[in-house]
Image (tube, rainbow, N blue to C red):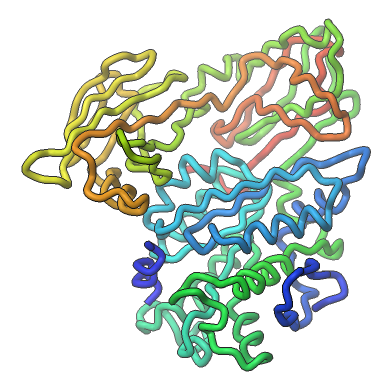
Length: 476
């Protein structure tokens, strides 16, 4: 069963050319790939049209569990850099081994949506409804194209599973078949994502070379080098440019307004009415004195810092005294009832003497100061209202166990920050290479409605264009 598998996680077409490999693994015999990549084409266009004179910036995020942490993801990145050497690729892998969808839906608040990828490559086990929550929130809060991956094959029974979606509803009790042949395809259709059906490719590959599933695994689920090769090849095959799918839906979600062409300075102001949740300035090269003068940014007549939505928490992590850092967040998510300040927060926790799963704590903000005390089994609202922690948000023992820390220390500090997702003033970032597209976020996380942006400066202000992002689903 798919959820039970989480326990284990604890511990060719002519258009597509696979990456050159230094190993001797048998090649993948792809079927006709002509329909693959339909929902990735904005990303692929940006990559394919990058030149030495205009290097498009493309942000790619890998997200998931320990499977996504494996080396296949780096193989995919390396292949993209090989195929598109002129692109300015920004690639991160923020996967958290052992975190199923029930937990990843919480950490996505700090790890996924704020990253604002152009492309999300996603795989996770766990609850089907929480999986959908992640996809839906990505559509509500970002303009990312999404490549979802089905599960790879882990056991002989997978080879003969039912694949007719009508025969594997959730009530069937056939969890793996339900997820891979019913639920994930339905989500891909509902949200317009790309679905990398690596499960089918995996089965064909095993049959082509008379291999057992274990031949590609190092344990019951994780990939060995051969499996990493195959998974990378599967994903690479869906990252293909095909102009017949233009325009991609995502092209309508992101608009670039060029200064001097689509918009213009008038009376010392650059004014744009737009509808969306994020706006970036595309900086132009130049370091002349007039260009360095700060340009005031206002949205709907307000400083961006005055929007509560443009402040966000980072991960809440700990490094117990005498131990190593725990990369898994021990509290997630953290909420608030009052507007935030850009500051650092420290929660000093102590394990209860009678109940090792209970923690008492005090909270301090670097600007707010002492902000209350509480217990992990009760809802906590800080005195300022800037921090809200629910009992279900605590994940201390599990996060520390994943880091190899047992038992939980008697006391430990949890730290996080409030980061600004805005600029009240645009200042030249000092672009040295005019070929590289340099983006400066002016506001990220606005209500996905109509706004008026006003920048007070002059034609010397080094803004080449403004880029507007309107997520396809409105936030509730």
